[in-house]
Amino acid sequence: MVLFTSGTTSRPKGVVLRHGNLVGYVLQTVDFASAAEEDAILVSVPPYHVAGIGSVLSNVYAGRRMVHLPDFDAARWLDLVRAEAVTQAMLVPTMLARIVDELAGAPADAPALRALAYGGARMPATVLARALDAFPDAGFTNAYGLTETSSTIAVLGPGDHRTALASDDPAVRGRLGSAGRFVPGVEGEIRDGELWVRGPQVSGEYLGTGSVLDADGWFPTRDLARIDADGFLYIEGRADDTIIRGGENIAPAEIEDVLVHHPGVREVAVLGLPDEEWGQRITAVVVPTGDGSAAPTADELRAYVRGRLRGSRTPDDVVFRTELPYTATGKLLRRDLAAELTAGPAAEPTGGPTGELTGGLTGEPTGEPA
Image 1 (cartoon, one colour):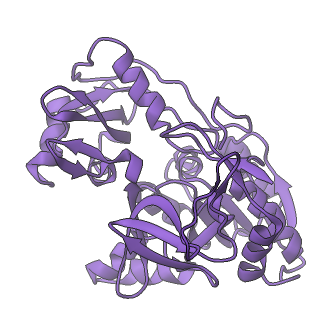
Image 2 (image 1 turned 120 degrees about the horizontal axis):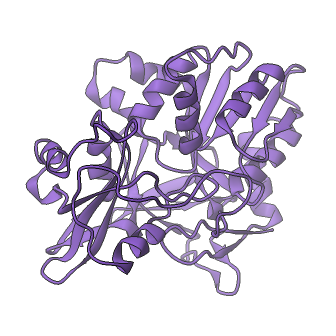
């Protein structure tokens, strides 16, 4: 099959996934006919996304009943989980954020749900903490993968989540921010800060351009990452997203992870915009919490970052929006955001929402294949 990449930082590319890649993924990660009779999974990821394809293949192989939600809506998702006695579900972080917003601090009241997997984008720590409270009886799994790898290549399982939550060791607790360990059959290594992987499920082949695997079968993911001594993988952002300001490389995720903990920030995206003096300016695009009437000021947020990171990480500009642009599978469209911010007059820091960027989560593409 051919599936397209998200096109979040560049034009979408057609990834060729061959029979051997998909079989390699299923056979290494799923036991045949392993589902219990009462099992049911709720699939709300579109079928043009590798996670949607992976869900169909793996759950058919396991023999699990599938419930499909073609157009994501948080209230409808909760209704289906309860009505269909859903036991497993897979979500992208943006979907999970909308579900916990819908619950507004109340428990989910979904007694049958025992496994909840998330992946496809970075999971904000604040969203994960609220979700763990809302679904106390569900085991959480972080599944990391790419279109080019036939879906999941690393997993942080329920046991890892519980161990990290219960630990007083900052290093162990920090594993909540990791992608877990590689699944059987997949190898990974770090080269110059970038993750390279290989295994039967790894394609690395693009429509019209062929394979980008090296001579030993390794694929460059373009994800900046590190692997700790215990084999836990930490994804630190896309190489394409790196901001180069005054000759210094800055990962947007480092700044986003600080800003998202500010009580006045609901969502944030950090990117580099052209600057004649520095090469790029650090621009933070913030969606405030609530109705915006008590939104933090730009100076307040800059000071918040400056107090927690090196001064070179302080945003040059803070721009407020009521919404950020996402693909239908919850990936932030950074190139659309950058184009919007550079198309008109330079944005000035403000104290509240100044406009709206379109985007959402439905079963239909929003202009970019996933």
